[in-house]
Length: 183
Image (cartoon, rainbow, N blue to C red; front, side, top):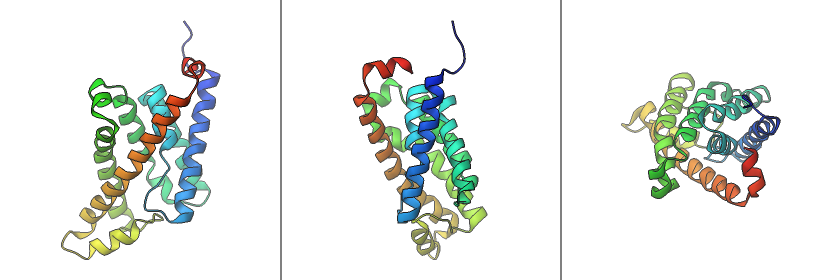
């Protein structure tokens, strides 16, 4: 029995990282309040599991960080946590029956908490994301900066994760059976 990663899987990992980079740049340049940089991570973690699910985020955040969005370096642990959690939970029978909205909520809570802590403590609530305006508005309320970061992050991440999961589900349904067997 052959162990390790196949050439097809390696190419699929690289492709997923490119999907993350393209999505991240679209969100960055359009100043969207969602991120679109986890579609490839969710795809890989759904197909190959939690360990490989962390790789696209690692690669894409490094590339995004080197190509202009320096914030991407700091959020690398968030994407890796997302890949691990999604890969671990994707095929759980209760989540398959409960719907992907429940999965989006479950993987969003810990990743949003981590992301909010990074945003508040390292950047004072100001990042390259379009949601920064919302954070700054809420930070002036009794919620304070960290809670404002968390609430905005939770809202934007839920939308982002749900859209990403729905897209990945559609992609996986449309893939030919031959492709499923490769992975």
